[in-house]
Length: 568
Image (cartoon, rainbow, N blue to C red; front, top):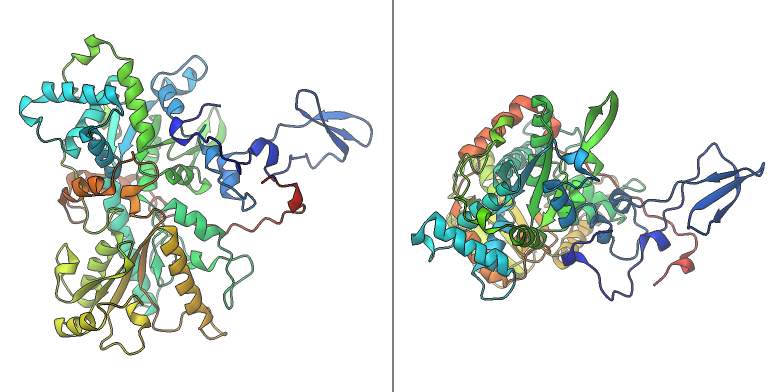
């Protein structure tokens, strides 16, 4: 098995090798009634039926989705994903060996870069360290060929162009930016929130026209962080009127897809229309994005040689540090003749009608709010306009009707909207040193129209979950709804402290060094860029509503019959 060095485990005493100690049993065909199962000298499983006939059983294979759908593991399961989403797989996609060449040689390779990853790469190239020497020297030479006057200003956009140029020399045909699909994700999240608000406040009689039919309840919680989603699906907390095996958190998760899966779905659905075959690679700041890509909800039907099957919408996810390793390896294998060529200026990626970084030399930009995409801020502004007629500036906290409160740390922030500046100022004076959510205060001077929360890190996630659980517990036993007032209307949750900018797959740098270049990017409203508008037009033409949304599943708790058999 080939492992990415960034994820290789060393000296971890509580690691459980899946082949030895995973609780998933060997699958025995239902048509057989084995009397015994033995293990051969070569490690194979042999079943002997009641008639004495022997049958070789298929070797147990633990895949990533088995881990996602299982609560029995007592330690991390992320090592399962390494062989499926690795630097080795990426290198094979670019330079197929004889073993896998027939699978990949006819495919286009499309790479999508997240802005958080590009900023991390930019910070690394500027850092005074010995890491990634080949990438740093090649970047310096490349900048010299692009233009001698830009040495003193290394920007994320320049780093992005460098990455695209290197990959194009190795056969990558198309390049996209996940910021473009984030525009669409933010738009649909905003529409979802307003529709649910109007439904629950009885401003409209029909459920919101979204997919799926079971729309979320207020407070809506963002569902774009796979680490948080995995936790929510496995959280078996008991609350009043909860159905057996149901996670009350799932009733509040937004059904809107993350930018990664929004874009992956667009690419693959569009390829089905055009008849092209595409291998999609995403460079993301978080290893958990590999988990997200592996979910059954993100598969599309295929027909190959008359046989039906499925394909992943996202074929491969690389963490930022893994991508840097791949660049280092690719550059180390290039000769001087290739390195002396001028930067690439053309691409064939337009043949599947999507925007492309090399065709559209667009500026990098960000959305208002957090480094995780600004979901709370963007939806807050959209809701203020749609529900109350308030036009807020892009930086909503500069409006005199808005308060940004820190509930103990920068990773736990509350955003409040009041009817007027006077009510806002009264609330501001009262709550300067209070960490309790505003709506939970005993005698607040004024009621907020909206209360949003940004919570990063599992410590804060546990605080939020306990607050929601307490609100359910205090509700009447005849209902599973909150008592009013609910603590929040919308919650942006990310599993990593600091959000996506400090994701676990980022190259190790000081957070402030990644923070500064990201927030120096141009701030734009949703769908204010040409590529995002083009992407939305392609979706409307080629995609059904399910391309915008997803579903979640409760993961039942696994009962281990013999706990003493587990290895610690």
